[in-house]
Image (cartoon, rainbow, N blue to C red; front, side, top):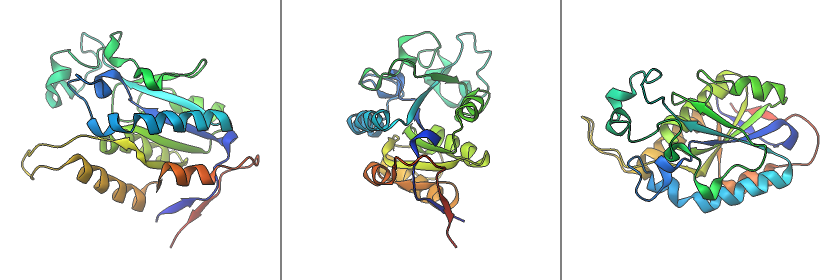
Length: 222
């Protein structure tokens, strides 16, 4: 059943910025998400809000070693990954987009799959910090953001999913018809809002942040 994150307590909350890298955001990037690029100013302002309230910010970067030893099936899924022109560890393409650059002391978690939890130490870090709620932003809505939100919920974190600080790209027809970015985004938000997360806007999120030092309240809805 869906649930509501009624209060966001800064000391117990982390903002996860998913894969806002040059290879997904820069103007000439092969894997560019125009929808995600368009929301960069809003996300940048949201990160400053979080820092001002004492909410920790942590980043993820989807990367692969050039020799492909951590590639899995991505060679078969994405030509720009297969030819090593995108998401190669150590290149400028995997760096966080300059307008969203991490502040001093903020961590970037390198990952090799959609989920920020799969094969990384993210869960260890969050538990060390005493985190109970995660806020998901970034790209792409339906893949890396969705997978990260699902894995967070599986680990019993309350999940806030920002509807206007996530984004994706148009989908071509691969047998079931093409989908626009807006349709992919909307469908994913609908699914997440029913089964996984409290989907809300940035402004709604801001109204739920409290200075009280307590655990976030998660209320199940029948």
